[in-house]
Image (spheres, rainbow, N blue to C red):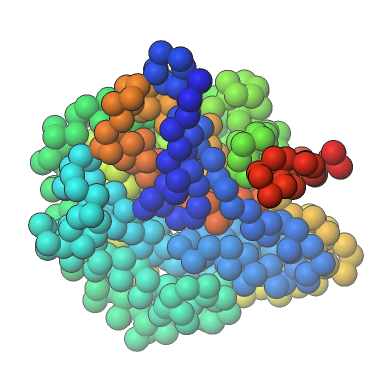
Length: 475
């Protein structure tokens, strides 16, 4: 048996590699997506005062800090036992929606559009955002502008674009000012026009990628996301819903605080990324997906007119429950439109300028769970503290971990179709990487594995022979 190793996997956030295993006949037997970095924020946080957690957790990632900021603050709300003022709830929603827009724009335009525009078999030297700007300058400008739109909202609310600390236990640290609101509202029409233009470009060219759509992680699975009681998409609040590939609801109205009853976490020896599974179905059969594709599958509707029109076309062309991970791209663009419209709707409410934006309290509980939809899917923060509010234990269940089983199945599916023995084309290997890009994994966020970590150290002599092997278990 031989191996093909793709290292590093390019155009993703973080460090990873893919190993493709070939049998003696040169056919692909299996493939693994290895996450090769570990950051360990679950351990770093132990011993910190709980009120520091939101700003500390925002530093897990520079791409989606707001997602961790919101989920962490909500876990702290539980520890304090407070009801967050309604104005603060809505302001948290605004900044999280802005986070989703800017992150989705980065994923689609900067990381994936080079494959879609230039071709999966195109020259890798040109297959990047610079090549996109040369061949389709308007598409490139739209991507840059949409990311800027989301980042500017974060900066106007949180004080800075990366690692803001404005979302705090009990609410937010300062109310929204009229000039801030007006500045954001003034940018809405341009952002909406750019998002619709990108959507129309994608839909017009969908037939060009029919083969990839049929092979890129196309398999039945479960889907999970947050929904409001109305059935609309919920990005910062809501209840858990899990459906299967036919739309059967396996969990509806699920309490996020009871996530440990619904999901198990497993660690494989070849990755620092936990694999999360739906407990009633066991491991690894309980495979499910989260993120844009899953959210569009679990909701009844999104809840704004333009986005629901796009959702109706998406379902008319792909079916009610599309199961190809390729369609994360389309779902991501629809969510950009919806998030822009939701920002406008929230900011148009005069009450958004209210000054009551934070509840304060001492430690009232020793445990709290916070949940939020991150760009890549549902995010859980779970903290246990002592009576003085000092963090004793942390568990982070990250969207990329939810998707880990699906990502591994996807790379195997793509490799088996495109990799043929010794005839390994660059474009074939690019497709193996590209299926990972559909999930837009955030590996800095997600490498917090629990249990027995796969760590070994080999001591070798000058000729390269192993003279001693040290492992975490003391071997």
